[in-house]
Length: 186
Image 1 (cartoon, rainbow, N blue to C red):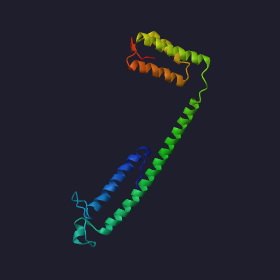
Image 2: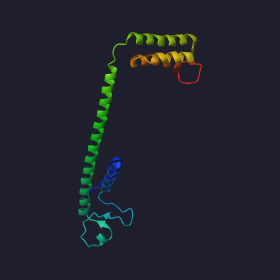
Image 3: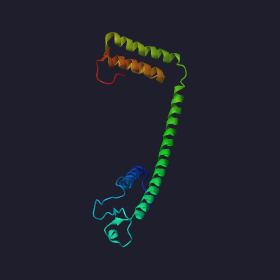
Image 4: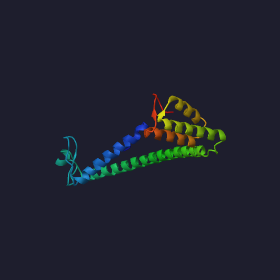
């Protein structure tokens, strides 16, 4: 018994459905003490006592213990196959995610290896802090403040830029600065 999934993108969902079905069918016989009653007239029922081929119970839709055991063996084999396929899919997904994370971390560590800021960057950093301090004295953040702040951000390294943006946003969110125009603060 083999199941072929033509579409790899949906194979995980199909496999999970198959696993749930197999577990449900396998558990049904176990929890019912070996006797499963038919939900429909055409579904077979498990007989507690073995029957012979051609017996009356066989013709009434009963399945022998041997047939049930063979079905369980098939289901276990299929379950193992699907579980192995899911394991391979999960390990491939995990390794791809780890590779992407390592690539991102590598790029971030290269980006974090910023050199010391030059004089121009320090001057722009001080300028941006001065703009925020001036606005805090008045309590308003004007469009002119935004223009000056935005111009000073262009040359700042990311760590300095994050610091001054954080200071501005904290001041706005704590109501120490109120923008007097419509639009973003920087």
